[in-house]
Image (cartoon, each protein chain N blue to C red):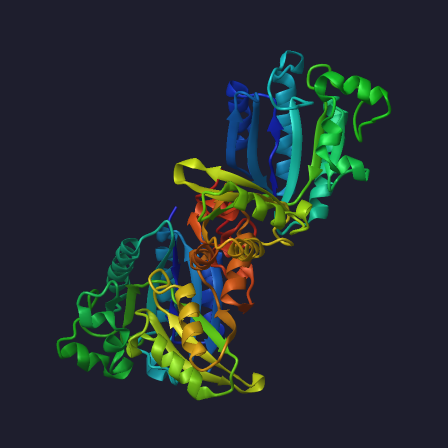
Length: 301
Length: 301
């Protein structure tokens, strides 16, 4: 069975978020992996996982609940936003391809446009034009400027040709899993971390799917290369660590540790072990637990 | 929820094995991970996993089916055996301790003795005396010599004081997961692989939970250190690989690859990744899939 993750962003906190989380938790076939809020941003993020059909249904219901509850005309927050449900990414986790997620985003987008009257813009891998793959391009102008932007020819992929009066517009798309990964350096010199960050990141000629910046960890008296890995299958954890190791050696600095923030697909970690252990053939099917995942095992699940 | 693995060995192949596998597959709450037979040994191994109660029930039913079907008085095979169901290990996989498995083995042993009239010997971590932790000590004399051995004072832990007339006796116990792991060397010189195997294994003063031997892979023109890791939590995959690396360096030989045979618990592989990536804090809970295992997630499962 295909497992897809979704990380919808809602322009709310507090009781509205609680209702949304409760909706997901009650939905059969959906597991809530995480949720968090930022009061300053007046924004919440929920991480859920499930098979395509229940996931699509659950996210639709959450978008409907958000549209019924949140009025963007009265919404204030530091984070740019354009909709009650601002953005909905779908991420292939196991037994699902990027095409499955694109298909899912199109199906949900069509339904949201038709049943809820909310214009939907497809973004990232689902985008209908290259420029629209960049979420910032879609969100530019935000809720307040979206009516004029749409009148000016920036048509939605689905739904009406003008924003929903209180729920705005929503971006829906497919993307790869994102890893937040930091490598700690045995130096308090931020310029070293900065220079390594600039060498390892795509912008500086480094690894294609790595974004990086140097950070000072004052309480520990060390620095860190703080990264987002936007495609761990192509720019892998072991490549990142080994590249930072040889860049740091130039300054006589060692890698003293690392941290993975939040969640990661099992395959990202298995890939690292397979590289370092030099496993010639290895598949996730050799992991006992992989046989116990939904749809993989016998009638236990 | 606790997940326990069991790998019962049955003195049969063919249709009897098929019936046993079908029994496990039909049992609610049980997943069959693997099964295999050896005709020369006239013996089969089934790997199943589940929560303690359904697992105990399913294994009991399999032992009953084996006792009803197999007559050891007519059994021939190369592998030493003492029962229709020869040996039943329970292995903690997730959310279960060794004590849970010991408790499970005692409970099942008592039931098999009482309801089926088959004497049960507890072995490995469940053994009632240190010498009985060794399965070979229990099995010595095999089916044909067991009646005399028991009359001579080698009493079963549960059940009658004489073997079941056709199903013999059964060993039941708790043990750690076993990893079969081989490291390939860039040399065709078997004496190098032999010497490294002798240095890394417990018997030669090496790692406590490692059994090792040198093997020639003729078709590839290389050699291999072939190993069993009997406690990967204490003698880890990365320790094994790094130890072989520095031992091989003495001969100017490189590690050119490795292979994990069969199944391994996820934690064994995560531990290797965490070592090499220098992850300071990392838990299996950061793996998305870990939230989808039975009893871990929401109502998806």
